[in-house]
Amino acid sequence: MIMDFLHIKHVSLTYGQIRILDDIDLVVSKGEFVTIVGPSGCGKSSLLKMVTGIQAPSEGEILFQGEAITDIDAKRGMMLQEATLFPWLSVRDNISFALKMKSVSRKEQVRQADAYLDLMGLSEFADHLPYQLSGGMKQRTALARTLINRPEMIMMDEPFSALDAFTRKSMQKLLTQIWKDFQTTFLFVTHDVEEAITLGSRVIILSARPGKVIEDLSIGTEKKEAAARIFTLLEQ
Amino acid sequence: MEDNCLRMQEVNTIRSIKYVGISIFTLLTFLAGWYFVAESGLVSPLFVPSPVRVWETFLAICFGEGYKGSSLWVHLGVSLYRIGLAFVLATLIAVPLGLVCGYSKTLQAMISPLVHFYRPLPPLAYYTVLVIWLGIGDASKVALLFFAGFAPIFISCQSAIEEINPSRVIVARTLGASTRQVFFHVIVPSCLPQIFTGLRTSLGFIYTTLVAAEMVAAISGVGWMVLDASKFLQSDVMFVGIILMGITGLLIDAVFNIIEKKIIPWKGRGE
Image 1: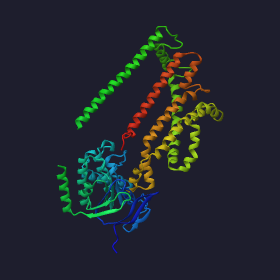
Image 2 (image 1 turned 120 degrees about the vertical axis):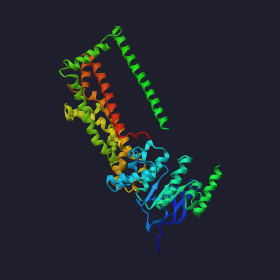
Image 3 (image 1 turned 90 degrees about the horizontal axis):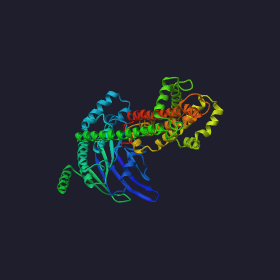
């Protein structure tokens, strides 16, 4: 039997009397860009927390590369709505944080961080502190900080929802490019349908609480481009 | 955009120059008023010595025969030594203890009640006990100042740990940080701004307790000088002492400010 990359096996979540998630059963393959979209309060963030390993499901289990998720693992990177950068570290040192934790030599840290700074268009800001950055630059720093650790999967919890429309668009473009280049698996939670369709190779729609999977759609490149055109037209 | 930033900076500088000007003006008005009141003979020099007289006394204590056998610098030096020693001891003990108590609820339950019991006590209330235990030398004085400075550092360190954004720790762990690395690379730096606030409050408390500490059986120190001079109604000496303590306090605070801006420039600016 081929081992599934990520298997969310009949997972439910209950807080006291409230049922948040109801029997979620999903298999995510390596290299997919899965977006999870649903109304607020449908438990999509909770689902992501469980995959991260900071929240245990009430029922069912989640297998990552065949092993049950019980704790945070560096193989699964994450990005939140808030960039959550380390305010005392420069942009460069924020990006190279994971390398420092692995005791990589300082020279190598700088070399790799500089490559990511270049990729993110942040080279000019390498020595700035996070508070000196705009919202979009903060998220690009956070993205680079996650990527440098080469995680097998990246979980994102509405990372662009606090950004203005223009910045959000450019971040989405950047993320799509990175997905193509890095071939990392993404699990991306959003309440924005347009964003879900623009980014995802597969879109999962959750119902209102208790959250249930009501649609599971694969979106080919052609359909995606069509959708993007429609959105652009609608805007005009 | 950068141009705008520069212009904003210029506007800010002009504004701050304006406010500094207002402060200097207040100070000069105050000095002029003081001079007028003292020189006009409206008030006895016993209550308000003239600023000229205070200045002369300052020079005399400073460069002349000093006060009661020691120059002003010796008095100031002795006081600063007591403050410094107490502050360093309080920092070395309260910072790690506070951080650990923020981490471990058990330790917190053990130590917190003691700190919260003694913290609101007026220092003079337990000073007498310290003198009985430690004698009338420097030890009891430093101990008093130590206790004055300990609580604010301890409490701020403890609450600093409790207020850390949990996402920061989670993100660090997804980046491969071990528990130990999380402590040294995330928790400790996250706490720095609050630790600094605690240190600053602590130094303030120590400073205000200084006069009390030097009231008992001292023969040196700025606080002692003021109290001793009051016994002989030497109001000019008292004024010199009080003004000097004020200026020293301001300087200490200013140095703290500079260090703080150097070490934690991100303080109060979000993430």
